[in-house]
Image (cartoon, rainbow, N blue to C red; front, side, top):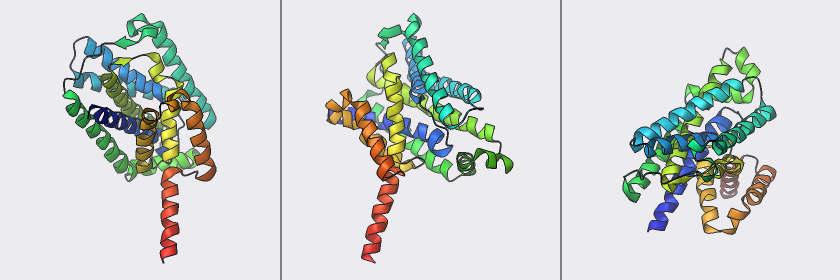
Length: 283
């Protein structure tokens, strides 16, 4: 039973992380290759505050706030770059985060932070809280996708210049996407820290950013349910098949190549095409 609970907690945290990046990349079209850094900001903030005696929930909220502020700052610095240059910029942010954490003894340095206090909810209670957070992020994503904000994000993702000519404040919407997406990444990082109760720089490196990006691309860029399914599956694959952990980049690279070659729309498009095929055969 303990193993199943741990598995479900990992799935819930991964779903939250995947959807947080989907808001930035899938909805607003802003490519990010350093998303794990914002998860790390949330994790380190939450962990340090709880180790200094603050309760779990305020610490988790502080981690979200810190990650969101960092996301806005990165968004402001990235307003003049697009596409490949934006990807390189965000990747640089990830490396900058790792460099700062590794050099600061107050942040644990290379050894990381251990002995993170237990949230005090029990394993079942923590599982319910994590799943509640994941469900809330799913609801927020679905609601946002159908709201005026989602339509504005779609316009920015399709063509920033045209969206600006139509009167949309492109800068504002890009910053909103970064603020919400990175805040939710901070939430996922804080949950991760209090689940494992140990974090180090390698927990939020470039490989983890690629893992989260793989969840979005394989699930279907912009698809909420596709990302949910891909996040759940990719989070448990290394646990079910231990060899994948040693060859994570290779396996995820092959998956990304296969998806982009045979189903560029991801799992959501593949499922829709299969459903349409059988429906035509039956009719």
